[in-house]
Length: 199
Image (cartoon, rainbow, N blue to C red):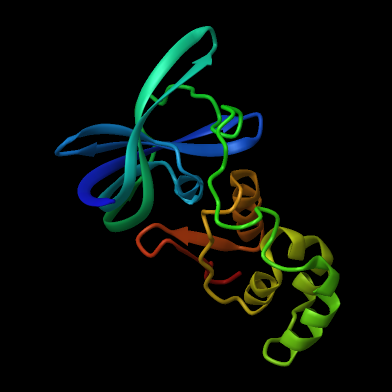
């Protein structure tokens, strides 16, 4: 594992499975393609800072009648100094990593971080510590399997949230969309989500 300074150009692309992001990481040792889940919460733009890279590897895929080979960097952590969000020039269409047949690398079971059988018990226990607001309470059973019980209570209490990018990529996107739907905005520097002012 190495840590290297660089500039990550993030491109946002609309695909069959919704919006996703890919990145081009420009460093002193070369330019690498980045297609990790963590990018799906970023806006299009240029981000400068330190990038923790687990490994570099070659990957190939066939898409729209063309075979493409990339040198990819598996980025496991990002520490940003600057974030310049805005449209990126020459955004070429790319296949969605979910559709590429890539196997999500995860340290969990990829479903959700709780036992769905105990939703009611956990709900009762956590209610003592947090209040469950009406807007979140009415959708509790739908939200809990997507974001987990703890995150439901963070949403209800308008607390800052940090997503776990090691879960299945499709689930990660669902979690991102839930946060946006509940008035949360992503801060690229802290890589956390916070409730927008006035919402």
